[in-house]
Structures are given as C-alpha cells and as structure tokens.
Amino acid sequence: MIEHAFAPAAAAIAEGRIPGAALGIVHADGRRVVRHAGMAALEPEPEPLTDEHWFDLASLTKVIATTPMILTLADQGRIDLDRPLTDAIPDLRQYDVAQAAERRLTFRDCLAHRTFLPAVEPIYTYSDDPDRLRAFVLQREWRHGPAVYSDINFLLLGIAIERITGAPLSAWPLGAGLAYGTPPGPAVATEACSWRGRVLKGEVHDENCFALGGATGHAGLFGTVAGVLDFAQGLLDGSGASPAMLQAIRTRVRDDRTCGWEKRFAGWHGGDACSPETIGHTGFTGTGLWVDFARGVAWTLLTNRVHPTRHRETGILELRRATGDAVIASG
Image (cartoon, rainbow, N blue to C red; front, side, top):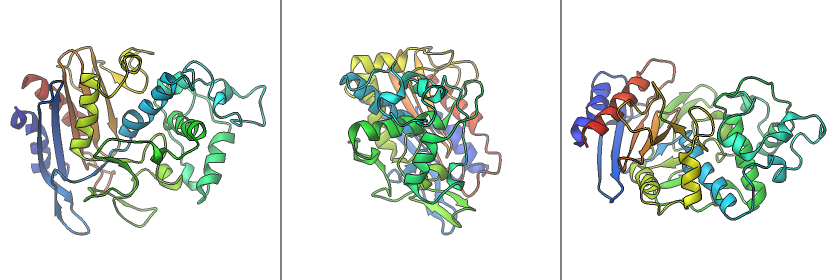
C-alpha cells in the first residue's frame, strides 16, 4: 500500500521537483505506515532525509496547535466562539472603539476565515521588536476585502490565546514529535532566505512568525511524521479531541471551511477519491494533513518544496492530489 501511495512523491523527487518527502498513513485502529525518500537538505551541505527529521509545518500550525487550543478554551467555558475577540483582547483597535470593524470579529469568524482581513501582510518589515509588532497587529486598521484564507485571522487568535492563558503559545502542552522553536532533533532545510541571509534549518520559515518571536497562531510549529500521525490518530479515534471539538472541525461554517480546516471540495489538495467527510490543511513549506473520518484513515505528506527557493514550480498541488487519491485507492 505505502509504495503505491508514495509513488507520486518518489517521481517528484526523481524528477528534481522537490528535494525530499515523507508520507505517513494512519488508521483509526492504530495501524500506520511511513515511507520517506530524498534529501533533507541540498545546501549548504547535502543531508539525506530520515524518519527522525523535523519539518517546519508552516500553516499546519493553524490546525494542529491553534485550532485545538481555541476549541479547548471554548470547551472549558473560557470563551464563546460566537463572541467577539475583544472578550480576550479588549485593546483591539482601542482608539476606534465605536467604529472599528475588527472589534466585531468573533473567534468563529477567524477560525473559518470568514472575515474581511487580507490574506497576508509583510508585518516583519515594520519593526524588529516582537512586542511592537504585536501592538501593530492589534492597532492597525486593516484593509477590507472579500473573505479569504488569512494569516491575520490566526495571528489574532494566537494573541487571544496568549491573553487568556497568560503564557506564550509555546507553553501549551503538545504531543511528542511536535514543538515550537528549535526542534530537538535533525531539521529539514527550507529556504535560502534573502532577508535573513542564510539557508533556514531548524528556524521558522515564515517571516512574520520569525519577527514575532517564532511562535504565533499561524505558523511556528515543527513536527516529525510520527508526531503529525499521532495528532491525526487522536482525531480519528476521538482520544485527542472532545465530541464538541470534533463536531466543530467536521461541520461546515462556510462553503469549503469548518472551524480551522478545509472540508473536501472540487479540486482541493486532498484529491477526489476521499469521502465528503474529509478535512485537510496544507502548509506553505510543502506540508499537508488530511483526515477521512468516513474511511477511518488519515495521511500526511511532508516535503521541503521551498528548498532552496520558493521561486520555482514544483507541482505541489498535483503531487498532493495524486497522493491523496493513491492513499484511498490503496485502502
């Protein structure tokens, strides 16, 4: 099964489109298989990929860390998902209390990306001080637009978690094989960053997350294949989430989204073969996780497709779709 499912990634590596990849598949009953190939780094020194390497999970942070944190706080009665963020961040746009649209955004709005906030902003270009940048995020009058997938939504959710708990996101307990900050094992290289002047390895790729201290609501999490599979199994067998949390991540809030996750739609990264009860998410560095509740199977495809540069075509969408279809076809 794993060889057939890994074939699209193996071809992408052989053709030089990506340096390396790891595929992990887990079932609700605990059965799992992992396959990896290629290189963890091409430069400055070549390094073969192993099962022990830690990947920069990028936006998988949103669903593996931030979404569970917010839903846990809701379970505990510490927040109401349909109340505004100002319950946790009273100083959000504090100089325009009466008119600021940001003050009316709810936790659920941000989880489901149904806000007017922009997709991304080069926040790292405004300051070198993480605290000043957090203040900037909270006081900025954000430009309005149609509802899009937005890092800003999860930046705000991360700040809300910090305010409610009185601790940085990195203090939240995570499972083995998941960590913020420098990972405790060998790391997969990402980009040769023109801003930082080095190949990134063991430090977060996302510029805004790096400038904000390395652990934010939208990025900053590192993980091994085993760590991501453990998380996915907890969703499949219910051991890692309460019934209310599972309902929130499985129920559509808008067209193609639940609380935090994408839900299967035509042409999405998870492929066409999965059931309608499948949720998934991707990360810019080349990562992804999909959970098919109807079939009781989840898979993660972790690549370093931005190494040594993001500025080339790797065919990552086609690779993810082909992998998802192969996983389902393999049973």
